Every structure is written in structure tokens, then in C-alpha cells.
Image (cartoon, rainbow, N blue to C red; front, side, top):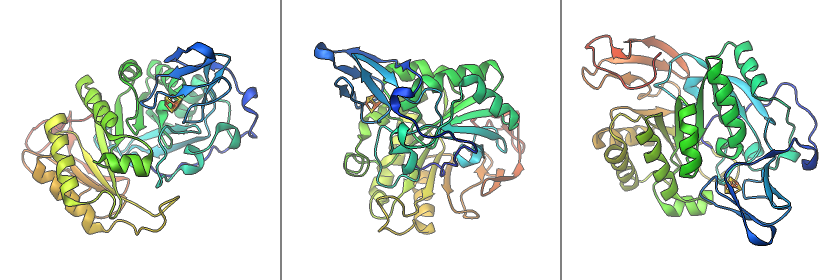
Length: 357
Ligand code: SF4
């Protein structure tokens, strides 16, 4: 994930045997002949023999029924600024109570949170917290939102959906920080529960997705289009990794696709890579690369192109596309000035797309 590193729960229980985890039958699977099942939650469509798990390591076939091993079992919980997700067009300056579990459905060599996303749930400390407990924790921390983040929330789908429903009933909105690797049917059921989705677009080539992430690009593009069509607020993040996904032609193709398929108002963030996990031999992204990518996006027609992970670097303020005045001024995760009122630019009255109230 390109998302910020995951803080751990302040109080954690000892890891346990998977058989001791609370049983919750998974949604979206088919029973196969001979005792196997096929998970239909994400594009991997894992065929899982009895007593085995899917690629995410958290969905297990037990006697011909599929169970999730991470329901009510978060391994991280903390309060983050919404800007850290990053979501720049969602209630600037507010906080989100952020949760994660073990596991992920892709396997990025540059994952910042590999110690939770690339492990099985029985190997790390977790805590028992149902949806009501998550809502209470979010309230206790004074947040307005619950964020599902750090690992891929799709793999804890059942828990996410229940937390989002409980949060919505309590006046807390939900945001999903995702790799976009989810099938159409479960995604359609989930989107009405969410206020916003941030998708990491890892690159714009199938080669990168296959070799660096053990995933595929096409399902992510389909997923982005479905989110956009549904109308849930969407922002895109591209972690630029030197030599792997930062060429000018690739960024031109990517940003032209975003503008033509999703429109000019979907914010796109170009963020700095830091060497980590299995990609320690590459340098951090130069600031010039981030600035150049932003210019490519602007030339392609993106109204809101940002740089990220470099506090103070040009390209982190929101500029009104109509009058070109700065309507949100940022430094790092801080909001220095907000000149959006009622979803409109205070200077010229133009609508600034996003979630502002
Ligand atoms: S959610 Fe997990 S088990 Fe299901 S298809 Fe994806 S990787 Fe496989």
C-alpha cells in the first residue's frame, strides 16, 4: 500500500490459533464439487481446497464453507488526519479513526505495511473489536469518520461493511483506502455505504502489476470506472517509483485515461516512494519527478493534480480551476487556509468538487 505506515493498537492480545478466531462465514463464494470453494470477492477468484486459504491468507475453506478469519479482529487502530490518506477533497482538517487487519489480495514489493499486509492473522497481535466498539472508539477520539486502510480493506469486507453500517447509523462516515482490487458485485453492495474511496493506481502497465504486485491492471481500471459511475467520491494516488513506473509516456497515458474515462475533476496525487520491504535498492523519488508528473497531469486536463509525501513541495494546495486562486492551502497534513464555503470557491463562486459538509 502507498498509504501511511500503520500504527499498532495500543492494547493488543496475544496471537492465537486460527481455529480460536470467531467464526464468520464469508460472503461471495461458490461451492465446488469435491469440497472446494471459489471466492468471488476479488479478481483473483481463488479456488480453495478444504482447510486451505486464498491468496490473501485470511479466507479459509472449512468443510466446504468459506470463513473470514479477520472479522472483528483489527491489528491496527489510530486517529489520522484525512489528509494522510490522502483525501484532499473530503472535509479538510478532520480526523478519521483508522483500522486494518492482517492480509492483502496483492503482494507489492514496495509495501510500507508489509508486516501486517503480507502476514497471516494468527502471526500478529490483534484485538477483539466489533462494529459497535469501532464506532465507540471513533467517537472517543473525536473523529467524524472511520477509515479502512493500511492493508487492503476488500479482504476484510464483512467487517468493513458492518462497521460502515454502524458508523452511518451513528453519524460517522466511512472512507476506504484501497488498491481497487474488488469484483463488481461486492463493490456495488459496498459503495452506497461509503462516503469516499481512495484508490492506489500502482502503475499503468500490466507488466508492473504482474512483476511488482502479483496483480493485474485491467481489473483496477474497471473498478475505478465503477466507482466513478456510482458517484462515490474518488481520489487516485500514484506512488512514483524511480525507473519502474515514472516514465513520461506512461504518465501521459495514465493521466489521459483518467481525464477521458473518469473526467477532469478526479484528484490525482503523485507521491514519493521511500525504499522499503523488497525494493530497498532504489532511491527515493526525486522532487522533480513529482513536479513533472503533476505538470503532465495538468497538461492532460486534470483539474486537481497534487504532489505528496514531501512537505512544503509545490503542488499540495487546491487551486480553483475557474479563477486560479488558491482555495485550500496545505503544509504536510495541516490545513493553513480553507477558502471553500458551501462547496464553492469564495473568490469566484465556482463549484469545487468534493465532500465539504
Ligand atoms: S479475497 Fe482472498 S480468497 Fe478471495 S479471491 Fe481475493 S485473494 Fe482470493
